Image 1: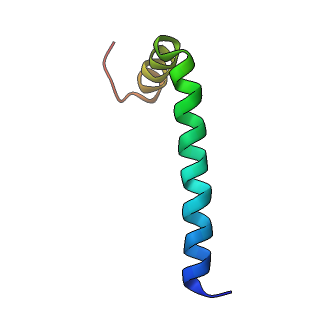
Image 2 (image 1 turned 135 degrees about the vertical axis):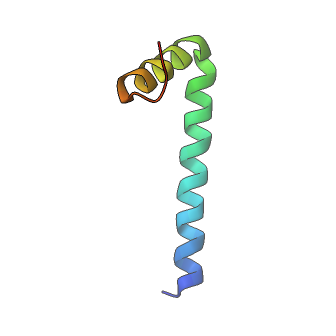
Length: 48
């Protein structure tokens, strides 16, 4: 399998993952944002 074919397959996998993630986050955006901020605080990337 050539490099271009592998890149296309990886791009398709990434696209499907992004589309699925977008669909899930759209179902409960407020809770997803709260979880995101919590992770930033835990990682020390944002001040509380």
